[in-house]
Image (cartoon, rainbow, N blue to C red; front, side, top):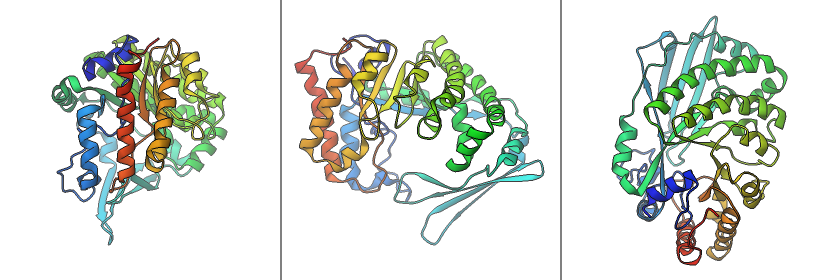
Length: 385
């Protein structure tokens, strides 16, 4: 099978020659090793072998966000963005939004050697700020721009597929606050929190419907549910803030033949039932103990007929374990993810290294992932029951 055929077969619950293996964000396409930008960690020579391995061997899933273009609306006119660099070369961005008689302010920082953005100050500091955000005007969604996604699909050919990215309503609201303030408001001001979620959901449903209709049959990743997963919030609120909203997103995606994958890290045992109630057809990243709290085999037994399972490996193990130890982890994940009846399994780590220099040990463990996965071709004849 081609890599694209293998991935699409897994999503549809059809037999495959071997379980797909994906390095998650690392795919050998999205990373530009020739870009000299000081904030591009992938131009360090240590990344070249891994990017080559991902490009040539893995079942590539390229994340694509669909931007919407529209004329400047009222909120845009009330927003000021300031960018500066400090004496260590770190990039700072301050965004200020005028909301009634208040100014909502966010401050982010990007370091040159770490591939992430730190939020030093969040827009929402208290309930009054959240009320002011809710009162901001909502304009039309504008027109989606599919050029990048269609270009990626063309260049990928048979080596993989694209995955459309979208946060859910919970992600939009929770990310406006630091975790402490978010949890306090979500727990104690539930009516206000639902009001904010409904505002975000209204726009999100319109965008999702437009994209899903124009680009049917694609894989989607819905991120944000983990904000309500234990230990942050109790399962009851996970159902209220995730299930009751995300099932509408999933329904739209599936109406047009798409595949909706829910993304959430960490402890899933007590919320799996509510995740399944969204109707999703995929779940990632199912993490091993002790980061997670449920075995792959248990998830497959209970929900494998509904969901394709993505995961089984922890990024910290890739970075820290020797090859012998890590091979045992991979073989265990492969066994658990494929045993019994079910739609399918994609071997995948929970994340990827964030530092500028990739260790030789981490690279060798990525090689182990491919070796074990390709070994299934000759020893099992496939998966999906």
